[in-house]
Length: 186
Image 1 (cartoon, rainbow, N blue to C red):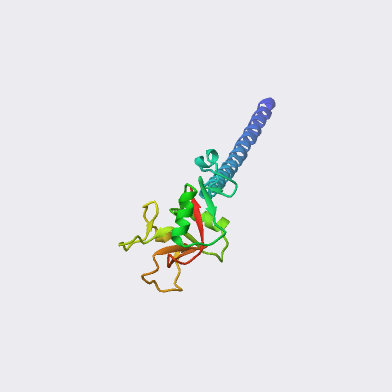
Image 2: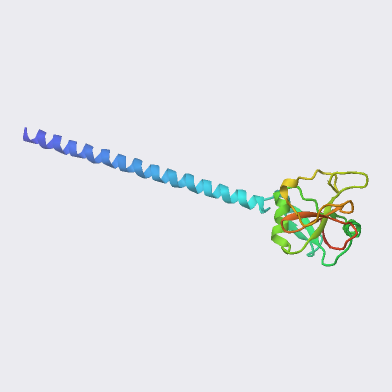
């Protein structure tokens, strides 16, 4: 009889130990699961941020620019002029380089400006009001998205301001005859 009691006591305490170990394992499993989910979310955010800045663009890996004067960003090549010309002269210079003035369509294009240009400088881009028109139009005939920029309020717009300068964060209408630096894009 005494052996049965001892056996029952051993069995009972063995069962308690197993149950507490299962609870402990379950608790650790829950913590590991939460940590894994947090790590996945962090990695996903990193991938999204890097892809916004053009690091994971599939066309970036296979595209190369014509020379080291051109900068590859987001699958496109950009050339930034050091001299100054009128808008039309700048446009023609880009054509001579088998390119066109920069067209800004999304955040990746804007990030090129933020990462590569001087904050105090302004550059001609491929946006203007064509003769006989009233709306801003890109040189590739795509539509202008004003939400990508804050409008420069220093100068009131006049009829002569038919071409656009872009700076680090804003756009401004300007007379096409004035001389500024420019950006070509492939």
